[in-house]
Length: 183
Image 1 (cartoon, one colour):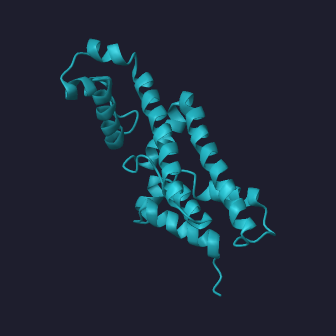
Image 2 (image 1 turned 180 degrees about the vertical axis):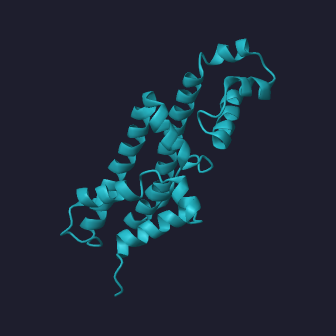
């Protein structure tokens, strides 16, 4: 039953955001009493915390699995940039999580640090192979990736420009790798 509660809550989060659903919504969907729900989760915050923790673990495992499939540093970097555990969850939910659920900040920071550590290793591999310019500081390259590609995007921007997150990431990658100048 615990797993089913998490599944239903995750679907509500996808549809309505973190603050847009209630425990009553879950009990109604599962035809259970609140007393039964409280046997598994003492509060909505506890339920959200469990979902965030699971998402973090899934995220780490998916990134590692994708990297294991890659043979070059460039493929690995692409995997780091494109793998997300819950692609159906809008980025607005991540923004909402950061804004209204500060207790989950460490988990979000942990995922970011995990990706950054792997990305740094991959960038250093590219430099060592001679594929990436060695006159650029890898820490600054990483900062650029972090501030553009690895940070959440605004749904408003995506909607206003009628583009998907994957289109945005692809354009950002082109900008970072090839610049804006014609050659």
